[in-house]
Length: 480
Image (cartoon, rainbow, N blue to C red):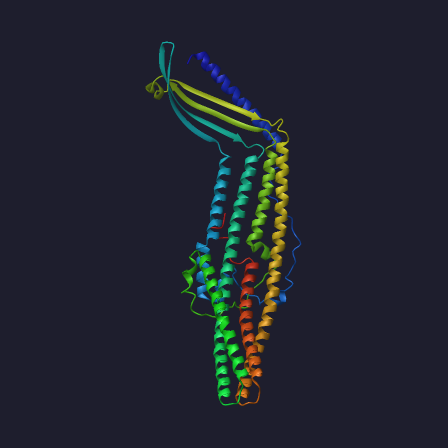
């Protein structure tokens, strides 16, 4: 390269550097007045100091809510919940969504750094009776100077979305664990009702036999015998419906654990009692519950992401600064290229200023502001829903516990009444209608006891879920 051309090249490069430095200085001065991406949290809501149903709460205790299903002391329930949290399709989908959010965060982080690329080319030139080769190799660099923080705001938004996705995964885990427990309780409750129906069927068959003996002895009537037979058939008709409920609950549990519907039929065939939780749960204050709830955390992180998106939209209205450069070698032969005889370099600084875009950038700010308003309202709705869930669970638990105690007393009295009525009927002291009435009452109250016991267990499950139990925010697969 001639000496004069080299000097001109250096002057151009120096001028470009000075231009870029001046532009960067001007941008830094302007940035002092720019609004940085805010990490503003949602407005504080009026949270009650205590639960209104706290009088129904168990005595305080050091209870862990992360693995609350272990407190039911049922190894099979623990096994099913553990398997569901591992293999359930909804959980796996939420895990994939979290991986996607983390990858998008990495993409946003990459925008803050310069990009560097390499290229090699070979060209054959012909024409005018002459021909020649042109070999080139070089490096190209580009960097967008994030003066007004558009890229940083995008990164803040992605980071908040990662935290929201992690909390959403936790919310799915909470829901799946509770659903498994509720279906398991329903299955055990149906098994208990089936056992009661079978026991009553045997008792009614004995009563039918007594009525037939009395008919043969001339002490009873055909009406008594037919009424006894009708009662037996009515009870027998309940058995298929109860068995159907058991089979369907087994199918649901199998699907929740990521298996075919009939996979757990043998495992769940053995009859076990309805699991009950111990009464030593510490409720804590409402504010603690809200911080523990995965869905409330997810809604809060969505607000933070929306705030960052507003800052990003505002920054996109400001000038955009770019630096670029290239270093290369060019030569007519490969040997000359590797020898470095011909060196080419370039430096470029540019500023892009939005002058007129038909109001699109302003409209985008308004769009993101509306998204932020929606996120704040969704956060408020999540808080109110969380408070309602706990209050409803406490009210249901309080009422069902009291109902269970009364029904147990009623079932005991109904059993005694039936035994006395059948004994007196055998002695001819009461008519058969009295036997039928007391027998129906016994069956009804025993079945009500089984239903109430399952309801109390289900209420405990719903309370654990409402309190935010069932996920661990420090878990490696959940933590951002």
